[in-house]
Length: 74
Length: 396
Image (cartoon, rainbow over all chains, first blue to last red):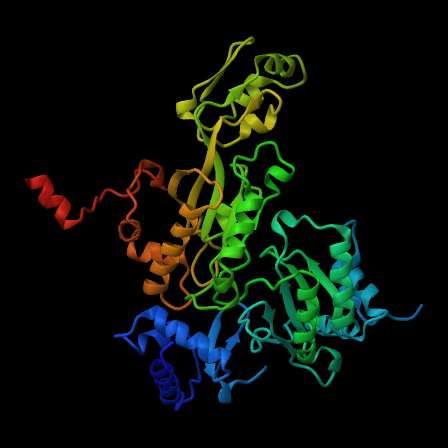
């Protein structure tokens, strides 16, 4: 797992979360890194979720990814 | 007589059918959660609006699915259902439980939740209704210790499900139970860590009766089928003929492709015209049986009418032998999911993507040949599209 990629993913989340929108589809996230392998970005996201830097947010049918500090339970 | 506190819900107890209201009332006698649920539901009927907020929390440590967050929007009135999360428990293949297992599931749920269950939900999972956030992890730990795991939810592979297959059914052409178990174990990461554009469902029926309705409900449908001739036992055909069954009227005349002939003594089947609808086999189970060479048809793209309209699955592979370790089908699933993840829009199901980009694009990506069985609706489109290189080949 590339630490550099993980850092860039977190940085991208911080940048994109500056507006009102805080939650993103995984598809949005992989599109932020057009030059990167999609699987590598997904693995970086999974690792960051394991480390509690990112969190899943789910409506039950759809899942979003959100920076841990912006996660709201209900 | 005291006036009922739930007059609107009481209406749902009338009639000869079992009522979920009666069951919630029973649970409410010992569970404050169930009691508040009952009264919030009554308020929903009165206000004609749901009083649930959904979304948020998704699971337990290491999981991104299996828990569906639910919160009351009237916690002031119903504090016991302020948080009322649902837990999806991965059901065993074919829903075969020993009573011990069901008892332990219920004991765990009485300890950690409302005690209310939905056995089973549309996904197939055992649905445990109503617990609080602080009970999620401990409930999961107890479930794990009892041998259960969570199912899928959100943008993930949903818990694969299958019919009872060879466990109880003589028509099974594939071992749906074993295949379902293999796929569930193989795709654990895809079930528990959502990384797809949207939900993805796998359902397996062991014969064309399609008892789990996989053709209508799954993105990836596996339906058992056979090659060759339907097996006929002439003695049993005669026995049916001398019973109440009118073979001409009830069997031959109702065959959708009219591929059967009955002369009063002998039943002939023109197997090349058979579409494997199972009608004749269902009516004459002792006399007719599926052919000897058995496998499955793989179909893709079925879904219910959310986001876009409902779709039935298309045939993708007309016949595939399915034997452990099922490498061919696992590889196919991976390739399909990869193409969908690469090209699908957010909240776009596989069937919608195939419709948007075209079946030929899908087939090319999967390196699968086009076959006549893939034609979903013949003679509806006068246009034939070729790839440029196909035209060049033709010119040469």
